[in-house]
Image 1 (cartoon, each protein chain N blue to C red):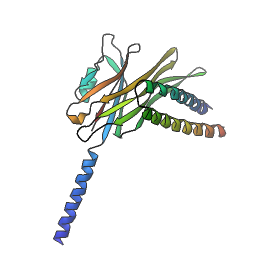
Image 2: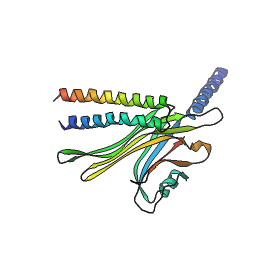
Image 3: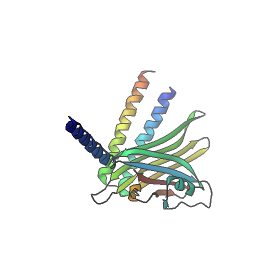
Image 4: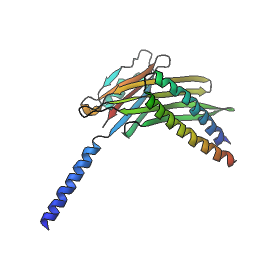
Length: 59
Length: 171
């Protein structure tokens, strides 16, 4: 259960950082670079969600 | 037979030289975060010198993280994370650094040029602490040590927390 708690916390943080990436564009980073970072973060979130689902199923 | 062996040696030498020339194009991204521990200490925008000089120049600050990303190439999204998750009663305290950086190789045939920018979150939440720093790091050009000058450039500084980020590109 503690492991699930941890994964969910990390997942919540990762999702919140997706919004922060929007600020990078206004700070002067080209849109293509921000989109690439967003895509990398989305892949990470997907992987964390898969891990979370597997851990929840194993409870 | 001797000619064949000589030819084989020349061909192997050529291949090794070509592979060595290719290897010369690889660069490593070095990234560091510091926090002031002495009130009168100030971070320099550029610190010139070898790594030992750089660390010596930070004598009024503590290292929060040091990172070396090998063989960085254009378009890399580099995640640097150091997390301590600590049980705090029923809650989970979170202490650490989470950076997502975009590395760009903007070199031309005449010159090498690299840049980095991104987002860093620094947290110290739990056990009575509630420090959260969100640092938006605009893209900044980095010194390339192969150009003859060893230097670290400051990417970002937060006055309130006394935290600063530095980076360079090495070979």
